[in-house]
Length: 120
Image 1 (cartoon, helix red, strand yellow):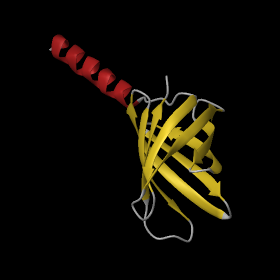
Image 2: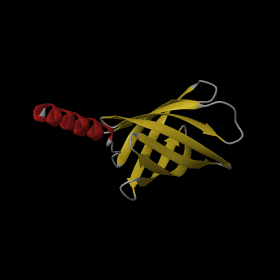
Image 3: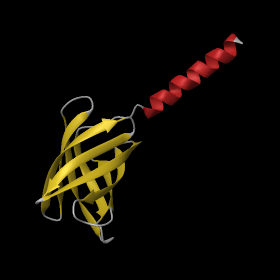
Image 4: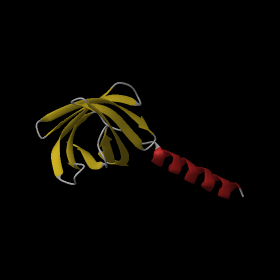
């Protein structure tokens, strides 16, 4: 019985650590789709401001947008300003420096997709 309990506790600890994701500071390669489905590429730079918050800047297709971001378990969200519009993106931290997400912007229908991959 003690052996079974020890195995259960070890498994629970391993599972909880799997959800303890992190996001690294640095420059990421951006690959995404616009609201109309067309592709775009660029870079994003993340600067950590605490254990759970950061600032982020995207440069895509000659356009720069800036925002704030937050990590919560395996979710990473950012609010940003693009011109006179406000947007939001929610990523899933999939590990190994990869974030996969979906975004939208105020006044527009639909959503786009985006993947960030940490550069070496």
